[in-house]
Image (cartoon, rainbow, N blue to C red; front, side):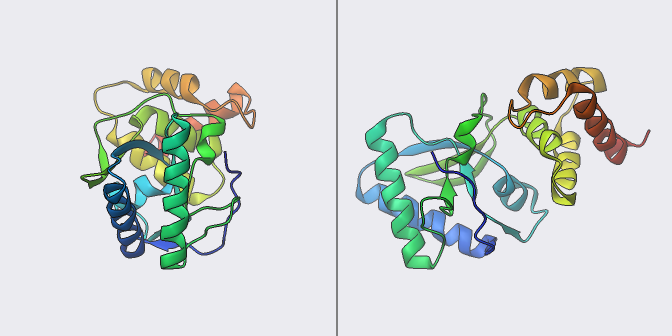
Length: 191
């Protein structure tokens, strides 16, 4: 597992697509097909097109140790080839989210290569992570976009999902989580 450490060098969508295609090509050479669940900035960058850059790709790596090691080796190779972060604490494509995990997988494909498919977690889980984090305006903007993607559910049902999927660390007391959610709701739909 990698601890998140920003490189300070954001990745553009152009470079990210090039890197992911290269990673898929390398997996093809190894005859290994992987499907991974992602969260974070890659969703905003590649699905919503709401930002120009991301710091990294956050994904849940394969449980199989051999597949995980192969993936890490190939991520480092692509990083070296394209000048992306390759050190152990800030890989450009990492499993730092494995600390709290992702429980869901949607049918929303963020990236597709015959040997590498990246899917988003379900919108409610992604929303929970963004509401929980609320580190900066980007998190709030991402949360608003995610909230607008959730169709056919009322405010309280969505909030119950946010509570259920909110990461356990760092601890955010429920009243603060509710306050953050209400703010995002207000920004998305008004009072």
